[in-house]
Length: 275
Image (cartoon, rainbow, N blue to C red):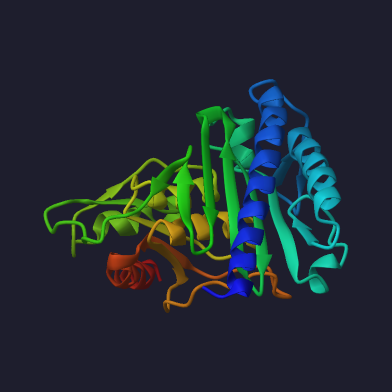
């Protein structure tokens, strides 16, 4: 490996250590509000934000921008300051992914933090304090859950094995009516990032994401899935790019890498059935 490559890998590992430490710290802030009736208000009509979101966002920004002042910043709960357009690297943050579930006492909420360079995540963390789970990933080095490596099987699910599916509630009927293979709809999880992490941990075979997910919903989980030998792509098989002018994404599909083509075929069939 060339010296420049070694330096890049070291930088990615250092960034992962930084964001993991910060995420653990602010996860404790979130726990301080969890199930304690935090103040809540709504933005964009129906999207909730709580005082916990704002407290976490402010603390993360203070920690991370102090440590890496030359990095850009993109967060769901911060006004775009333009830094993401000029910096070679940036932090992409969702202070609480799954705010609605957090407010309702659902444990599967995450602090999502990633470092993005050239449109792709190079380090990512999902801190899930209510579940005592920490997912981490470094591009080219692997993904871990509580320090243990995550690596999906290279074998496709057996034909007799039901596919465990997570998707929008609106598509549940279409899934039930699809007979090409037996499907098992898992309980809906409010956090999109956590849903995607269920691919990396092997809890789900496929996750279907409806349009309009934002960068901050996806970046950390995308890397974790990819480094665990999974894949997140659009319905045509293209991997998402981040930090573009438009932060929204279309229909996305996540699954194990070795059965991703089959997952995409299923997504296309479900999409047609829903039209």
